[in-house]
Length: 342
Image (cartoon, rainbow, N blue to C red; front, side):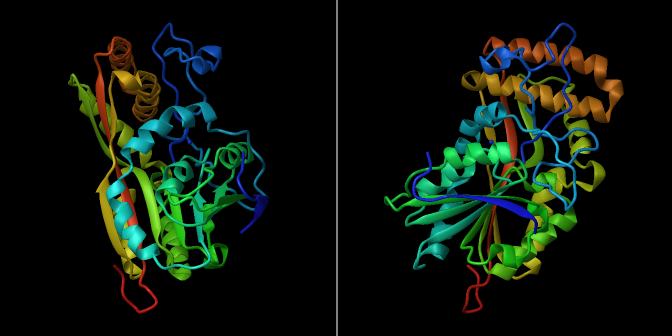
């Protein structure tokens, strides 16, 4: 595994992804100060739940691959972080704590495709004991944000330290996870292929460590008030998510099979975004990405989808739109040293 490492000791001072942008006539399409200042008509670069046509998620870094500019805007990752934190399935933490209890020497956590480090900010303060987080991403810019913004202490006041590794997490080997006590990821599984999920499951099994993989898209969206075009856009979006062999809404099913085949006990829990008037900025950016992917998949939707999006954005700005965007969280517990999983 090729990587570039930066370590920060002591207390250091976003699987979401890009979208194919689709904006109705008359709206600003370029990123500008409006996006940073909360203008619902400004489009944040990198906002939205899918990658553009022919692109791969930023967790990829192949040997010899030319460097590319960052695709994930920290602004988008910051915008979605409160909704992610509220959505993650806290019910999976109790069985995880049971598995982790009794460990000595502190817990080493590998966070794959870490973005700006939101998973660590959510999870580290919910687990006891000293922790060392190893943050993986291909984007050095995002790794900087993740390291700087990492939490200072665990639930019981234990020290939290962090290091960053820049490399190809989709080709992890057990050696890369030597000493790992836990593997985490957020919004990652749905932008991997079946082969890559198998590689991830094999690496976790080889290292004998649990995996907590959150916020994988489930392929279902509920909008209130509803519209007849909702289902058609959702179907086109889901087809776009599955392009080029990516798993999209099939990711959790495939991951469950991959971990179970390697002897792990797998638990799945829903983790939906619940977006209302208080999340209007996030909803507006998500809507643009959702519709943009649908139109890229089915260009014949463009005219109707444009009208639909204008109406939805107006309702969002007026505080009249609510959305439930379904995700799933997965906890895989490998067989323990005694040969059982729990």
